[in-house]
Image (cartoon, rainbow, N blue to C red; front, side, top):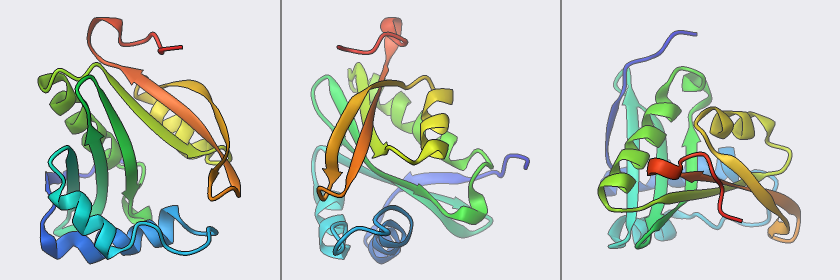
Length: 162
């Protein structure tokens, strides 16, 4: 598919429910309960060290990203693109926005985890220069293993921290 133009903006209160539902349906499927419920999304939206992004395409909600920023590291906590908009450049545009913001803030590294069987996500992050740094057994509610990946920013962009 070709790239779809999108608008990336900071999330607003009116986006909370849609982000939470996407998390439940696309990320937390198969897990017990609902950890990224609307209350938690609202808390992230208010967090001083948290950036919640929304991507819109064709006047529709296409995806979101929640990133926690520290002094030198950022953690991509939650990220999803609606299936109809996947493989159309929207996810890449959001991650690039996050990386540019991180560099501006002096952050030198971004970390992310995904289910070990999520090969599409692993390929996506690898294409953006993320490198695997290990696995965490039981990371997802003691049910599933996570693969941890990292992207160094700046002059040492391809060397993962050991």
